[in-house]
Amino acid sequence: MAIKIVKLGTPRSQGEGLRIGTVRRPPRGVPKTEFASQDWYDVWYPNLAPGVETMKLGQSVETDKDWAAFSRKYRSEMAEADASRNLDLLAALSHQTSFAMGCYCENEARCHRSLLRELLKERGALIG
Image (cartoon, rainbow, N blue to C red):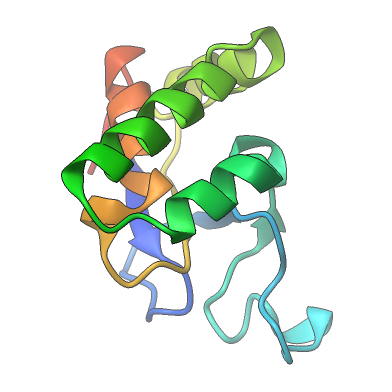
C-alpha cells in the first residue's frame, strides 16, 4: 500500500489503484467518459493543484530561482488549512490502500507533483 506519483496519461502500473488528477483543468479534447480508460485519472481533485496564478508562475519557470519562487508559493498554498487537511488525509490513507496522484507535466523535477511527493512524505505518507 502506498501512493504512487505519476504523469497523467501514462499507462497504469499493476496495483496502482485509484488515479487522482491533481490538476487545475481536465485534459483537453478528451471526453469525460474516457478520462479513466485513457489513463488520465479516475477522480479529478483540483484542490491540490496550484492556484491559477501559481500555475502560471510554474509554467514560466526557466531557472532555479524561478523554480524556488514557484515552490515557495505552492508550499504556501498547501499550508492553508483545507489543503493541509487534504494532505494529512491522503498521507493517512496511504497506510491503508494504494492509489496514484499526478499531473500532466513532462518533467517531474519542474512540476508540482514533485513538491506534492515531498509534502506527503513530510506527513508520513508511504510513497511507492
